[in-house]
Amino acid sequence: MYQKGRAWIELNMEHLSHNVAQFQKLLPQGCALMPAIKANAYGHGASLIGRALWHMGICDFCVASVSEAIELRKAGISGQILILGYTSPLQFADLANYRLTQTIVDFDYAKQLNDFGKQICVHVGIDTGMHRLGERSENIEAIFQIWKLKHITVTGVFSHLCVSDSSSATDRKFTLNQIAKFQSVVDALHSKGIHGFKTHMQGSYGVLNYPGLQFDYARIGIALYGTYSDSCDATVARVDLKPVLSLKSRIECIRPLYPGESIGYGLTFTADKKMRIAAVSIGYADGIPRSLSNKGYALANGKKAPIIGRVCMDQLLIDVSELSEISSGDEVIFIGKCANQEILASDMAECADTISNEILSRLGSRLERVAV
Ligand SMILES: *Cc1c(COP(=O)(O)O)cnc(C)c1O
Image 1 (cartoon, rainbow, N blue to C red):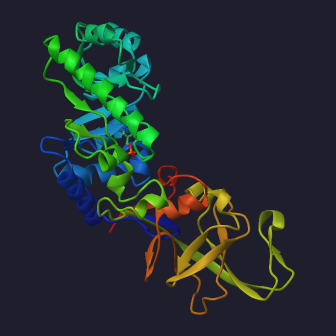
Image 2: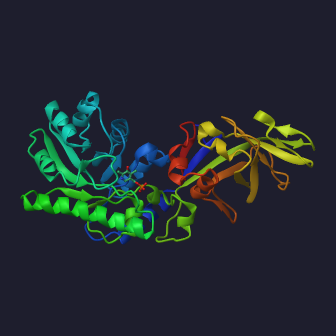
Image 3: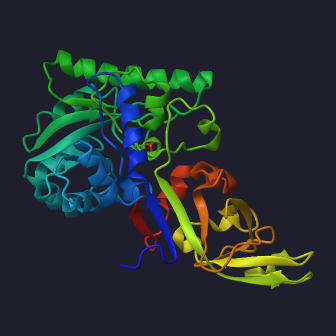
């Protein structure tokens, strides 16, 4: 296989295992990691990441869809795989065939899944204030009834925090209220004699900002990849995280640009002096946001090279006027480290007015993913 040809992702699995260890140290005794490896493991490559985590001794995973879960099964992961989202009745057979654990999105859905008639393991989603999925926490009778359905086996109960990344007093109060509502559901189930189910409600920020909570799993996504959602969070550094992913490409060719000449689609950049520009073989189809046109930058030879002109589907242009030693075929780094410079996924996200989760999960299927 011709690797690292055009544009690619390098995965540092030592950093992944470092991050896993950091969280295992932070989590209370009895709380296991249930890594979120949905959206192709946040763009990193689900099979590569899933297998690496599996070999680190992680046995429980969560994904968004049946097809993501099947990919992990085919990669040899035989542990618990929880599907966090809705699965259509058309795919109920896959839940049984691949021994997947399905989220119960509300009571009616539980009945539908039960009517399918094959024994399926489920975790019951509880809505404690996000109002996305889950049976409302006050509908304790409906939640209780789910245990009575013959063809579903409830192995877990979970909820999801929606402002756990915020340190504002209002948001902290909201989060504590979500936690209390979830705990009251768990307590009510126990008081009805229902035991033996697992509990979980924290994602990355739930663990980072509320590390002491005693649940059975922590569904950590973004932080396990060594990335904060936001670049401001990186400066707060609650744990020592190391980025797993680097995004690299190559210079296709270098050419001069003379004063008054404009470049690329829409001719949105015009030189006001003689410049050297380079075409790079990566574009928005690979996940470089088009909003970085005339805005973002890359690293080449350890120096910043601004993106100039519009980002194209497969290519973009950078200003290498200050980089005399650079030549065609050289590496250009969009996320990652080069000499003493580093671009974090959250830096790129900030530049593109989004969060690193979106940047990473949109990294294209055309990128080769290589463990280094
Ligand atoms: C994506 C997701 C997670 C992981 O969230 P991070 O913030 O990336 O850690 C956890 N739980 C649910 C329900 C999710 O959808």
